[in-house]
Amino acid sequence: MEQPLEARFTSVRTLLEAASPRTTCGVALPSEVRRVQDVLGQATLAIRELERVAAGQPVPRSLEAYRLEIDRFNAGRPNVELLNAIRNYNHTIIDALHQIHPLRGMTVLDIGASPHGYALEHALALGAASYVGIGLDVHEPICVRGPAGLGELQNQNAEQLHFADGSFDLIVSMSTFEHVAHADRVLAEIRRVLKPGGQALVTFEPIWTCAYGHHLHHFGPVSSYMPDWAQLIWTKEQAADALASVWPADATLSLADAITWTYDSSAINRIGIREMRDYFDRSPLRVDWIVPLMDDGRDQERLAFVSETVGLTREELMTKGLTALLTRTQIPNPTPGPPGA
Image 1 (cartoon, rainbow, N blue to C red):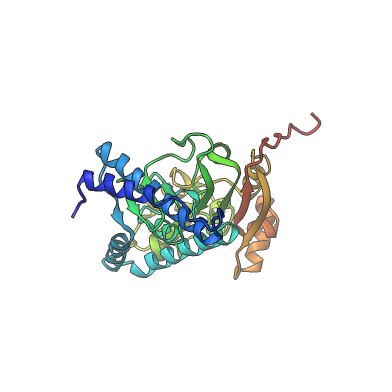
Image 2: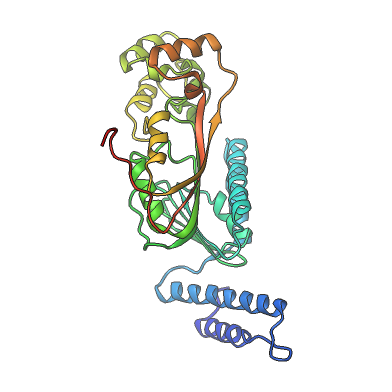
């Protein structure tokens, strides 16, 4: 049952009254300082909820209730195993961010967030003061109250974020940079909305120049009919001709739709490994480290043939994605000029 507005104000006043530290000989013990910090955090959270009520926005649902919603959603889908795997992956990356910098009390932005709230639930459980997940797949805004903060999902374009400069302590992005059309704009926006000294953990795959960069795996077993790296070698017409005799009539995706998806869909940015690395090298953020995510189990003769045909090294073709840790410094890194400038 929703708490009356007057009772909400009373709760905030009670919290603020409890925020005076108890001292011994005029000195507050560390445990008392932590208690006051927790009380002030709860008061801040309560005030944010009051602001939402005053603006006519719905009261946030509890984290416990939201987790049950996710459980029911996944269990009711035929691809429940895939959804659970994606949920676990989101939790793993949030755990990695938490290891880099504990999330307790932090403001966190998730660029390209799961519209099902998989990262939201875990970031709040780890004590984030604020989690905001944005993405074009978020069709309805969601707000969830965790033990120490609010989590939200919003529909926004990563290339033009609707946040003030220096809004976030930490940023995370999972499986998004292989989709955005202008990676340089996203990196610039990441720097803008990060606080000075704030960090971003970015990880993504599969990149266009890897064996399955066509992303047909989204549609199930039909992806096996597209040979490794075929999207780099075949034109649309060549792909249609080569696959016409083998493409199943009852496939989840028609051959014509598969060709359109691979070569024309805006869901894939078709940025290769060299260009993507260049975006990160030229970004206005300091690259603390960048690690290639390597593929395995590919036919070596096929790999050698593709390498010779498209002019990429074997290592580049076997790089399926990248993971990078970026930091906003006080002064942006200078953008290198053209060679010889």
